Image 1 (spheres, rainbow, N blue to C red):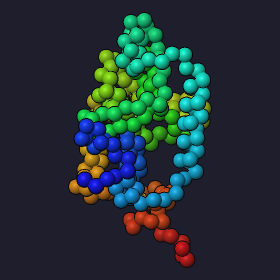
Image 2: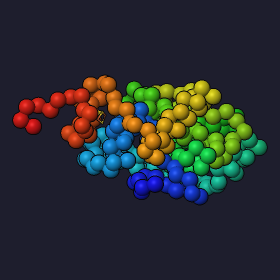
Image 3: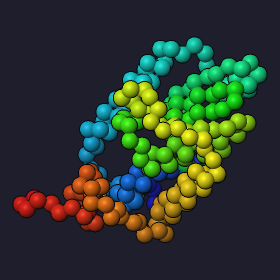
Image 4: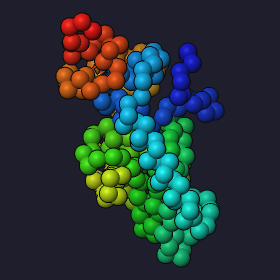
Length: 221
Ligand code: SF4
Protein backbone atom coordinates (compact mmCIF):
# COMPACT_ATOMS: atom_id res chain seq x y z
CA UNK A 1 0.00 0.00 0.00
CA UNK A 2 1.33 3.48 -0.81
CA UNK A 3 2.34 5.81 2.03
CA UNK A 4 -0.49 8.12 3.09
CA UNK A 5 0.09 11.08 5.42
CA UNK A 6 -1.73 10.60 8.70
CA UNK A 7 -1.90 6.81 8.55
CA UNK A 8 -0.33 5.13 11.56
CA UNK A 9 0.80 1.53 11.30
CA UNK A 10 0.29 -0.24 14.64
CA UNK A 11 1.55 -3.84 14.74
CA UNK A 12 1.06 -4.04 10.99
CA UNK A 13 -2.48 -2.59 11.09
CA UNK A 14 -3.30 0.68 9.26
CA UNK A 15 -5.02 3.15 11.53
CA UNK A 16 -6.45 6.48 10.33
CA UNK A 17 -7.17 9.59 12.46
CA UNK A 18 -10.67 9.66 13.96
CA UNK A 19 -11.06 13.26 12.71
CA UNK A 20 -11.30 11.86 9.16
CA UNK A 21 -14.83 10.70 10.05
CA UNK A 22 -15.91 14.32 10.32
CA UNK A 23 -14.05 15.42 7.15
CA UNK A 24 -15.55 12.55 5.20
CA UNK A 25 -19.05 13.43 6.32
CA UNK A 26 -18.58 16.92 4.84
CA UNK A 27 -17.50 15.48 1.47
CA UNK A 28 -15.82 12.15 0.86
CA UNK A 29 -14.15 13.51 -2.25
CA UNK A 30 -12.53 16.27 -0.19
CA UNK A 31 -11.05 13.65 2.14
CA UNK A 32 -9.89 11.67 -0.88
CA UNK A 33 -8.21 14.70 -2.50
CA UNK A 34 -6.50 15.82 0.68
CA UNK A 35 -5.45 12.52 2.26
CA UNK A 36 -5.24 9.94 -0.52
CA UNK A 37 -4.19 12.18 -3.42
CA UNK A 38 -2.19 14.52 -1.17
CA UNK A 39 -3.57 17.72 -2.79
CA UNK A 40 -2.40 20.70 -0.71
CA UNK A 41 -4.42 23.88 -0.10
CA UNK A 42 -4.24 26.63 2.54
CA UNK A 43 -5.78 26.06 5.97
CA UNK A 44 -8.83 28.22 6.71
CA UNK A 45 -8.77 30.91 9.42
CA UNK A 46 -11.28 28.80 11.39
CA UNK A 47 -8.83 25.85 11.38
CA UNK A 48 -5.94 28.01 12.60
CA UNK A 49 -8.13 29.62 15.28
CA UNK A 50 -9.44 26.18 16.34
CA UNK A 51 -5.87 24.95 16.98
CA UNK A 52 -5.11 28.10 19.01
CA UNK A 53 -8.24 27.65 21.16
CA UNK A 54 -7.36 23.99 21.85
CA UNK A 55 -3.83 25.00 22.83
CA UNK A 56 -5.18 27.61 25.24
CA UNK A 57 -7.64 25.15 26.82
CA UNK A 58 -4.82 22.64 27.29
CA UNK A 59 -2.56 25.28 28.91
CA UNK A 60 -5.36 26.35 31.29
CA UNK A 61 -5.98 22.71 32.20
CA UNK A 62 -2.31 21.98 32.90
CA UNK A 63 -2.25 24.85 35.44
CA UNK A 64 -5.02 23.13 37.39
CA UNK A 65 -3.66 19.55 37.32
CA UNK A 66 -3.44 18.15 40.86
CA UNK A 67 -2.52 14.49 40.29
CA UNK A 68 -1.42 12.22 37.49
CA UNK A 69 -2.46 8.58 37.07
CA UNK A 70 -3.24 6.07 34.36
CA UNK A 71 -6.74 5.73 32.92
CA UNK A 72 -6.99 2.21 34.37
CA UNK A 73 -6.19 3.56 37.86
CA UNK A 74 -8.67 6.44 37.44
CA UNK A 75 -11.40 3.97 36.46
CA UNK A 76 -10.70 1.78 39.45
CA UNK A 77 -10.28 4.55 42.04
CA UNK A 78 -13.34 6.51 40.86
CA UNK A 79 -15.49 3.47 41.50
CA UNK A 80 -13.86 2.40 44.78
CA UNK A 81 -13.63 5.87 46.34
CA UNK A 82 -16.59 7.48 44.54
CA UNK A 83 -14.42 10.17 42.95
CA UNK A 84 -14.40 11.87 39.55
CA UNK A 85 -11.45 12.54 37.27
CA UNK A 86 -10.86 14.72 34.25
CA UNK A 87 -8.32 13.98 31.52
CA UNK A 88 -7.45 16.25 28.59
CA UNK A 89 -5.88 15.46 25.23
CA UNK A 90 -6.04 11.72 25.79
CA UNK A 91 -4.34 9.75 23.02
CA UNK A 92 -6.26 6.64 22.04
CA UNK A 93 -5.74 3.92 19.46
CA UNK A 94 -7.79 0.95 18.38
CA UNK A 95 -6.17 -1.78 16.33
CA UNK A 96 -9.53 -3.52 16.20
CA UNK A 97 -11.12 -0.68 14.23
CA UNK A 98 -7.96 0.76 12.69
CA UNK A 99 -8.43 4.25 14.12
CA UNK A 100 -6.54 6.57 16.46
CA UNK A 101 -6.84 10.09 17.80
CA UNK A 102 -6.65 12.54 20.67
CA UNK A 103 -9.79 13.10 22.74
CA UNK A 104 -10.20 16.71 23.88
CA UNK A 105 -11.55 15.73 27.28
CA UNK A 106 -12.63 12.58 29.13
CA UNK A 107 -14.56 12.89 32.38
CA UNK A 108 -14.52 9.75 34.50
CA UNK A 109 -17.34 9.39 37.02
CA UNK A 110 -18.07 6.41 39.30
CA UNK A 111 -21.11 5.50 37.20
CA UNK A 112 -20.33 6.84 33.72
CA UNK A 113 -17.72 8.15 31.27
CA UNK A 114 -18.16 11.35 29.29
CA UNK A 115 -16.19 11.79 26.05
CA UNK A 116 -16.10 15.45 25.01
CA UNK A 117 -15.04 17.22 21.84
CA UNK A 118 -14.60 21.01 21.99
CA UNK A 119 -15.87 22.85 18.91
CA UNK A 120 -16.63 26.48 18.10
CA UNK A 121 -20.26 27.54 17.53
CA UNK A 122 -23.45 25.85 18.59
CA UNK A 123 -24.43 23.77 15.54
CA UNK A 124 -23.40 20.13 15.80
CA UNK A 125 -23.01 18.48 12.39
CA UNK A 126 -23.46 14.71 11.92
CA UNK A 127 -19.79 14.40 11.01
CA UNK A 128 -18.77 15.82 14.38
CA UNK A 129 -21.06 13.34 16.17
CA UNK A 130 -19.43 10.52 14.19
CA UNK A 131 -16.01 11.80 15.21
CA UNK A 132 -16.98 11.69 18.90
CA UNK A 133 -18.51 8.23 18.43
CA UNK A 134 -15.19 7.18 16.88
CA UNK A 135 -13.40 8.38 20.02
CA UNK A 136 -15.90 6.45 22.15
CA UNK A 137 -15.21 3.25 20.15
CA UNK A 138 -11.47 3.76 20.60
CA UNK A 139 -11.80 4.44 24.33
CA UNK A 140 -14.01 1.39 24.91
CA UNK A 141 -11.72 -0.85 22.87
CA UNK A 142 -8.62 0.36 24.70
CA UNK A 143 -9.87 0.61 28.30
CA UNK A 144 -12.94 -1.63 28.40
CA UNK A 145 -14.77 0.59 30.97
CA UNK A 146 -17.34 -1.13 33.20
CA UNK A 147 -19.86 1.74 32.96
CA UNK A 148 -21.97 3.62 30.40
CA UNK A 149 -20.22 5.93 27.96
CA UNK A 150 -21.76 9.25 26.91
CA UNK A 151 -20.60 11.40 24.02
CA UNK A 152 -20.79 15.20 23.92
CA UNK A 153 -19.80 18.31 22.01
CA UNK A 154 -19.04 21.43 24.03
CA UNK A 155 -18.97 24.90 22.52
CA UNK A 156 -15.68 26.76 22.92
CA UNK A 157 -17.74 29.99 22.71
CA UNK A 158 -19.33 29.62 26.14
CA UNK A 159 -18.25 26.21 27.52
CA UNK A 160 -21.84 24.88 27.35
CA UNK A 161 -22.72 21.47 25.92
CA UNK A 162 -24.35 21.75 22.49
CA UNK A 163 -25.02 17.99 22.23
CA UNK A 164 -24.83 15.06 24.61
CA UNK A 165 -26.15 11.49 24.35
CA UNK A 166 -25.50 7.95 25.51
CA UNK A 167 -23.25 5.98 23.17
CA UNK A 168 -25.27 2.93 22.15
CA UNK A 169 -25.29 0.13 19.58
CA UNK A 170 -27.06 2.27 16.97
CA UNK A 171 -24.38 4.97 17.12
CA UNK A 172 -21.66 2.29 17.08
CA UNK A 173 -23.17 0.64 13.96
CA UNK A 174 -23.47 3.97 12.16
CA UNK A 175 -19.87 4.95 12.76
CA UNK A 176 -18.53 1.43 12.08
CA UNK A 177 -20.00 1.54 8.60
CA UNK A 178 -18.17 4.82 7.94
CA UNK A 179 -14.93 3.41 9.35
CA UNK A 180 -15.09 0.43 6.98
CA UNK A 181 -15.77 2.71 3.99
CA UNK A 182 -12.81 4.95 4.86
CA UNK A 183 -10.57 1.86 5.05
CA UNK A 184 -11.82 0.94 1.56
CA UNK A 185 -10.99 4.45 0.39
CA UNK A 186 -7.48 4.12 1.83
CA UNK A 187 -7.05 0.78 0.04
CA UNK A 188 -8.39 2.50 -3.11
CA UNK A 189 -11.06 -0.16 -3.61
CA UNK A 190 -13.85 2.39 -3.14
CA UNK A 191 -14.75 5.16 -5.60
CA UNK A 192 -15.10 8.36 -3.54
CA UNK A 193 -18.49 10.06 -3.58
CA UNK A 194 -18.69 13.83 -3.83
CA UNK A 195 -21.30 16.04 -2.21
CA UNK A 196 -24.46 17.11 -4.06
CA UNK A 197 -24.77 20.11 -1.79
CA UNK A 198 -23.83 23.34 -3.57
CA UNK A 199 -23.41 25.19 -0.29
CA UNK A 200 -20.69 22.79 0.81
CA UNK A 201 -18.76 23.34 -2.44
CA UNK A 202 -19.23 27.09 -2.00
CA UNK A 203 -17.41 27.04 1.32
CA UNK A 204 -14.96 24.20 0.54
CA UNK A 205 -11.27 25.12 0.68
CA UNK A 206 -10.64 22.68 -2.21
CA UNK A 207 -13.11 24.32 -4.61
CA UNK A 208 -10.37 25.94 -6.73
CA UNK A 209 -8.67 22.60 -7.38
CA UNK A 210 -11.62 20.18 -7.30
CA UNK A 211 -12.73 18.73 -10.65
CA UNK A 212 -16.15 17.87 -9.17
CA UNK A 213 -16.89 21.29 -7.63
CA UNK A 214 -20.56 22.23 -8.14
CA UNK A 215 -19.91 25.97 -7.91
CA UNK A 216 -18.63 27.71 -11.02
CA UNK A 217 -15.71 30.10 -10.53
CA UNK A 218 -16.55 33.75 -11.41
CA UNK A 219 -15.66 34.74 -15.01
CA UNK A 220 -12.01 35.75 -15.41
CA UNK A 221 -10.81 33.43 -12.63
S1 SF4 B 1 -15.51 21.40 -4.00
FE1 SF4 B 1 -17.38 20.26 -3.49
S2 SF4 B 1 -17.13 18.23 -4.44
FE2 SF4 B 1 -15.13 19.22 -4.41
S3 SF4 B 1 -14.17 18.50 -2.56
FE3 SF4 B 1 -15.14 20.42 -2.05
S4 SF4 B 1 -17.17 19.90 -1.28
FE4 SF4 B 1 -16.36 18.08 -2.35
